Image 1: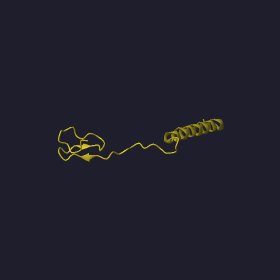
Image 2 (image 1 turned 135 degrees about the horizontal axis):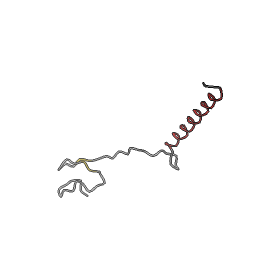
Image 3 (image 1 turned 135 degrees about the vertical axis):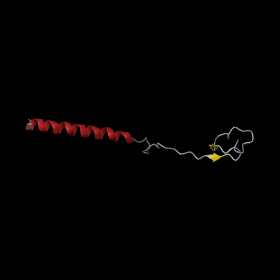
Image 4 (image 1 turned 180 degrees about the horizontal axis):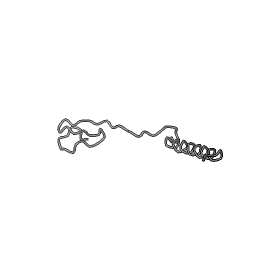
Length: 72
């Protein structure tokens, strides 16, 4: 049978687990020294090659074809 000390111990254990869970969840969003949170998804703008239709990054050498208009 449940007595008062057992109920209080159960409530104390639940409170400790809840506080630890909240503490661990709070660590997930740490920010950098300058106060900004790192972006998890960084998008890259791609350009389509007019010759072959491949998408390449603007700062790349193009699509590796000799007649690529995006080659630098």
